Amino acid sequence: MAWKDKLQPASFRGVPFEVESDDGSFGRRVQVHEYPDRNEPYVEDLGRATREMNIAAFLIGADYMDKRDRLLAAIEEAGPGTLIHPWYGERKVALKEPARVSHISKNGGMCTITLSFVEAGELAFPSARDSHGAQTLLAADKAQEVAISDFAGSFSLRQMPSFVTADALGALGDGLTGIEGALGGARGLFANPLGFLQKQLPDLLGDPVALGTSVFGMFRRGEAVLASAQGLFGGGGSYSMNRDAVRALTSVSRQFQAAPLPSATASPSRQRIVENRQAINALMSRAALVQASGMTATMDLPVHDDAIQLRQQLTGALDGDAMTANDAVYVALQDLRAKVHADVTNRLGSSARLQTIRPVSVMPGLVLAYDRYEDVGREQQLVETNRLARPGFVPAEPLKVLSA
Image (tube, rainbow, N blue to C red; front, top):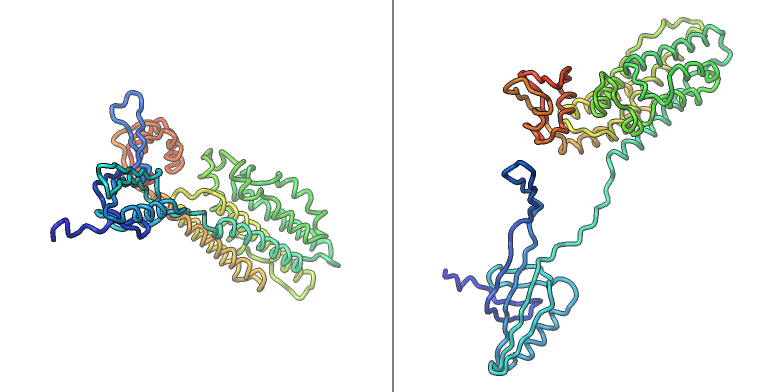
């Protein structure tokens, strides 16, 4: 088939016209970045350029004026329209500039029209959809509410001898100490020093709702931790701190779930001790899980491998706690588990994977970061990921680095 046979009759919004010539512009948009002491620039690709098509059209024949008027009416309609281009076929376009019409007396019976089109895209507004992180925080709030209610219904010292009260105080103190120990004394994670809460325990014992609320309130909210706590867990940055904190909270929750209980006897007071211990362990476990869930929802997850591990550990701990919970708590914890899983899974696509490299020689972390990423600001990431004790002398040994 000859090339002329492939041409299509030109028209705009269904009004035909003839084409004398055309030209267009195609390609991509780029931004050139030039740097001192570098011979080659960095070219940043900003996406495909807007396609433009310019057409020198003409109308001819005894009725050329009627054809002209119909074409002008089509040109003046609002919004984009359909162009049938002889060489490019059907395109959705808009007039970039007003059309120019020209009549020459010696060329009677015809007129020329200059048309300049650009492709017309869709006006796309942000689509409404659920924020997985926000949904996780709402589910965490619900789990906290239900857990406090469950604790208030399970914990009691009413008409009990003093040794039952003493045992409850000891169990609560041990629980707070266990959480603080698991977190390595990370003061930035707590709203107030735990010693302050421990001093309040005797006054809170008579009001289980206030006691449960105070235990959950010992932590800063997940997002507040991310903004304020720095340099914890061996001096790492905020990402490693939050990652290790979530792991520690998940681990200590499992310890409370598996904590041994004293033997129950026929004595009502001894039975109450066991029930109160169960309630306290569940309260501590759920406070840790709610905090870990809130932190996971608000923290960055730049490392794919870490995100998978955190998701597995946290959802597993939520499952473990739910297995021994009553119906209301079970539903709340399972809902929280589903929201955590969906949130982390949704963000995995933007997480980089870990790769193993071996530097060619001992070098400073700044040099390795620049060689790898052309960004010296990534040195801290290398230090945190590999727990390098001397960043100025990175050994020529296998190292874990992010793929991007």
